[in-house]
Length: 139
Image (cartoon, rainbow, N blue to C red; front, side):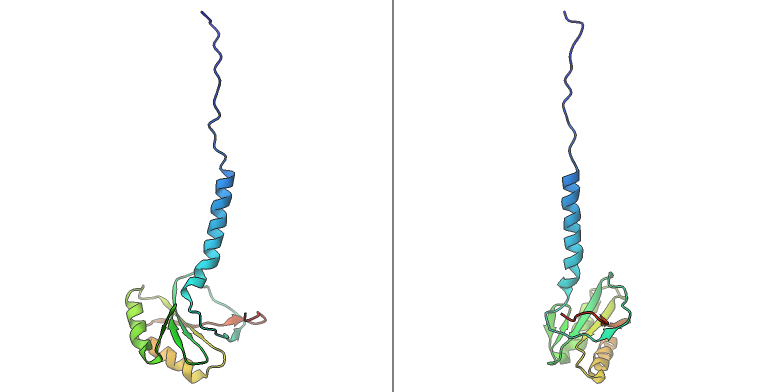
């Protein structure tokens, strides 16, 4: 009998570096594309501003373009149906959700004020007007 036995150890370690790299790339892609999913495809030239608030929280977007088209998030609606459609959308959200008006820079203040009044009538408590930073290309 042999008093001396040789044990061979198996390598059971899993290299996690490639898995972590792939996971981080997927997280970055998600963070970049997520804000683009809730905005309508209406072409809008936003007015410029010096400061910009946090956009990390979930909000409801109302988009007004130069031609008079209106959209709530990605759904295009009739201008006269804004209050009812927004009230229906707000009923499914947190009561303190931020409603962001994305209006074309060529619109009059009366058009924007009318959209703000419609949003208040629909039950919106927190309102904001979207702008782009000064010196940033609008494309």
